[in-house]
Structures are given as C-alpha cells and as structure tokens.
Image (tube, rainbow, N blue to C red; front, side, top):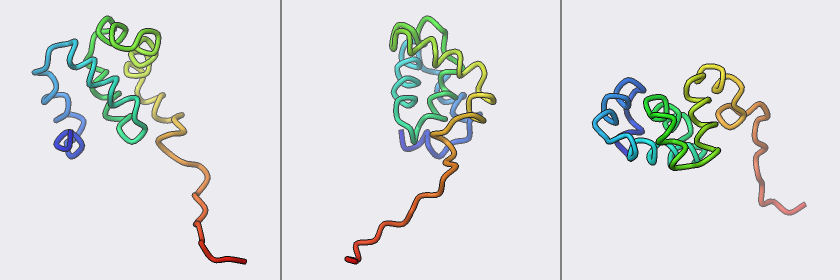
Length: 95
C-alpha cells in the first residue's frame, strides 16, 4: 500500500493492471472507504469492471463505478478532498 501512495495515477494504473479484476475491485473499494485514500480508490476503480465493484460493495459499488467514470466532476465537488473551512487550532490553555 505504501508504494501505491507514492505513485502517480498513471503508475498506479500500470501497477494494478496486473491484478485480477476481483482483487482490483477489492482494493479499489478498500481505498475508497478511507477518506485519505479516496482518490487512489477512484483511480483504481476506473480500471475495474462494474461487476467486480458491485460484487465487492453492492449498491455502493455502483456508486464508486459511476464516480470513477466521472472522476473530474466527482473530485471537483468532493468535500472530503478539499476542506472549505480551515480547521481551528486547538488550545489546551485554560481560560
């Protein structure tokens, strides 16, 4: 997994192409379900068959397949990928 995080989307596609479709679908769903790996999951899902994603995640697999085929629109409107509101700093100072 660590090596996939360092790769470009093109390299991820090349690396995961060697996997059977069901394993690729499993990996795509695994990554998609973790917010910090969501973009990686969509990249992998874009080369999966709809069937493998649906078998792995049911109705959510259909959604992942749809989002992977429309990745530009998905990432543009994704609130998980870009925070609009900056996080407030936390202080342990007692008032």
